Length: 255
Length: 319
Image 1 (cartoon, one colour):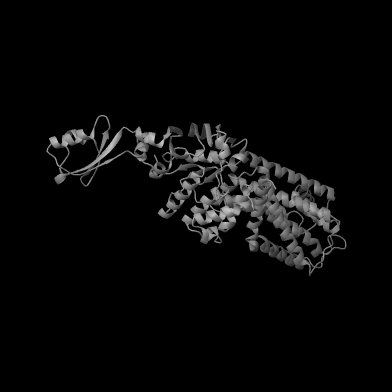
Image 2: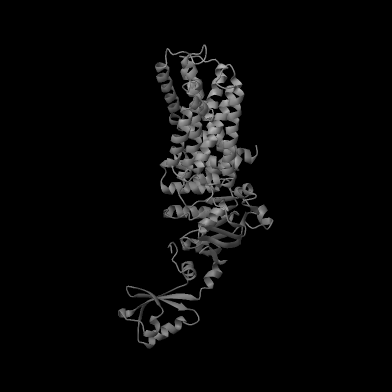
């Protein structure tokens, strides 16, 4: 193994150890929150007509809830890690280390994906006694999962770089991530929306992540899977490019 | 055991640190105004200057934390921008601020730090040695957030040395630390220096710089005011100091009063220009005035005097 590879793996391991050391906050809490959504919405919507033929509301809800949790946790993982390092000042150890921008990017993104995988598996396992989901297109589900977690992790890095205090991260979460994830068809099919909101939903990249992920389970979605994959990939490339530009130029990191 | 890390670079005649016309501006403030100097392999070098002189900015540029507007820096011949990986592997910096990662325990943190530099398990014995030498052996499994300030400072020093860099920069490492840590740190750094490590030190304790460093640079207002071997710098100071107490609390004759720089409870310090005011002439003047000396001491100028002479400030004081 070359020193560069070891440096990258160390940063990845450190980022995984960071969220692992506070597992109650980083994995257990989001799983419990998602399960509460499931409990409340499944009860409230019980008896309604199925969204997709032959698929109960609880089944319909679970993939969307998992993806919404992935979106929120991927963002939270990278943004909070980088922000804490900036506020505590220990980011200097990374800045002085012989690690390049790509190593930073890949290590932070992969650690966030690992956290999201853990949260997703925990959620699916926790719902197993109630609902057994089919997985008709596992590769599609995996591809959308990776692109969504990667995109939001990159967006979290951008937020962590731009933010000067925790309030700025909270603003990103409260005014961007949470509204877009709630208005992305987690709890409903966008076909049930009025025409204006139906059209607006199609401009929301999170909608394609949730719909594409749901397609992976049921083989059925509101839009073709190719479109969901294209939007997810496009969004990933866009935020990754912005993030890499910031890391390469040292934007807001180098004084 | 810390093996001589820089034989190759020294043999090749490469400067341990080469700084060329480095300039940095923050808005209207010109923090560095074309700083250039070299530090040879194996030197114990002091970088001194009053607060705001530009020392920390220069160190941050060397470490890659700040980008210079113009100029270049090379560590062991490796440009810190174009060849940043190689340059950073040769450099260890102890930052001035007490920064730490609260998620990890001491040993864990040092192993992570070594990993960043591409050092695997082979570095673990060195980490254990450092833990021992810096009196951290009993804290290896303690979380960083639970350590006292002094202990955190020790970890910072270990972090800078974890990859055995041939060039170590200590940015005010003894600010606010107790005597024991100072003694431990300097003994350890002397040992590393004897084994070939180049050490650059910034400190407000000028007696430390005078005792440890073979060469001194004084930075002021973003420019190098002087850079000389320590003995030469001390020798070029044209003054010496005479402390005396006159019997019966008598006053000095008129001709000597202008030389007094301090008077504390009857003990007067006279600043004598070596050529114009030989000590013998002072004694002769006292004898002529019929004054008896109760106590007398002479003091050679130290780095503090040179520092004040060049910058107009006491070490550690801002403008």
